[in-house]
Length: 234
Image 1: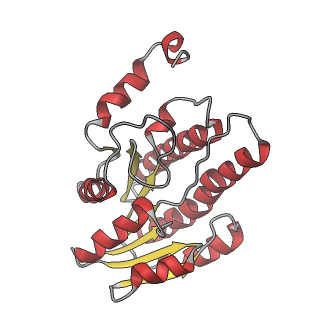
Image 2: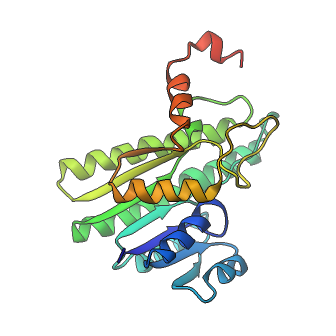
């Protein structure tokens, strides 16, 4: 696979695993995150380059992405945070929105506009099955992921209507064995290596929406069609 891949948010979790697997496939990989030491460890002795990037510093993020995205074939936006917030602490909600919404938009608009200028490219973003319904324990997290899903759908429509040849893939993982999987009684927690492999395959197949892993498609159906009166009791 001779591709140049930019992964935004790759110091851990899905982003890190995607970088490692793409590199093994022979791709040239660029990774970004705030934790530069972790990036160095990932990139050591590999065909991976790295760059410090804080998606919450919008002006700096836009400036850096404008340079990093040049000549790439695929950009994956994996940067994001999530915290329980039963007490509705404003700072927690604001920080989640600042990163998952503001940071995402700063990244994706710059990438889209570059691919629009060359009339080709592929953008993938990590959303979540949590985007399908609201949450009483993490309201901003679920809402921010719904924003990503809807925004990506808008970009997909824009690409098709304007005949831009930009593929848009929205990735909706279930529970994955990363730091983002929090809480008691978790089930069907999937290994990150499996999820990354399915994401790479889905991007290669130019899927518009990708639920990973396959078993979580059942949960997605339940979330979409479960009656409100029952969902609110869960």
